[in-house]
Structure formats: structure tokens, C-alpha cells
Length: 185
Image (cartoon, rainbow, N blue to C red; front, side, top):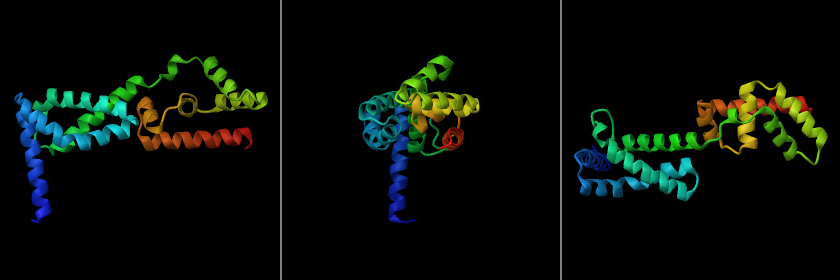
């Protein structure tokens, strides 16, 4: 075993021991766990939340969840850091899903009015775009609306649609291709 491998194993063992102590209510162990895990967990929060303030809030929520759920950690099932990353990621995704706008709350006329107001300088294009959107498969139309009119990212769209990221990216690209053909572009 190399020196690097033994250092990594020691670090993992230390994190596992800290999590097990936290499960017993050890606040000193929690502080140490916090200091060691925050750099990795904050990175996860930044990637998902996209702004520093939201990521900091998410990190605090995730650390609270780790404090509450530490008793569920089982070192025989996996590494401590992976367990904490998964818990953090799930917290962030739940928050993103909760704050994502729900398309069903928008009636069709509101959506088409938004399309027309975004293309007010060209009423013919707005009318054509309205007709082309109506022709899209409902799933594709929903993706286009959420991405372009509601401003969701692909990650947020995947959460909203309850589908894998790769799938929603494909749906958006297909929808755009169909719109392009319909508009004769």
C-alpha cells in the first residue's frame, strides 16, 4: 500500500469515527467533522445552487441534516464523505425542486402572452412561434417554456421534470430543432 493510500484510508477512517461520535450527540466531534467536510460539501452546494449566499444556506441546512441523520451512517456500506455528499446533494435538489416554478400553474394563454411579449417587435414571428409551440409534443413544449421563458437551468429543468439531465437536454434540443423546422429557419 502506498503512502497516499494509507493517508486516504486514515482520513476516511477518521471521518467515519467522527460521524459515529456525532450520532451519539458529540458536539466537539461535529465541529471537527464540519471543519473537515465543509470544503467538499460547499463545492457541491455551489455547483447546485449557483450563488454563494444560497450555497452557504444550503450548506448549513445540509450540516444540520448530517447532525440529525448521523445515526443512519453505516461505514460497512460506504465512505463517510460519500454519504455526506449524497445527503447534501439530496437536500439541495429538494430545495431546487421546491422553488422551481410549476408549469401547471400557468395556463396556456399566459404562456402564449409571454411568448408574444418577448417577441413584441415582430408580431408575425410571435404568431408563428405561438403556432409552432402548439404543435410541439407537450413534454417538449414544457421544456422549452421552462428553459426559455421561466429561465430554468438544465439541472433545474431535470428536477422539475423528474427526469435525468441527459434526457431533458435531448428533449430541449429536439424541441428547438422542431421549432426551427416549423419556423422555416
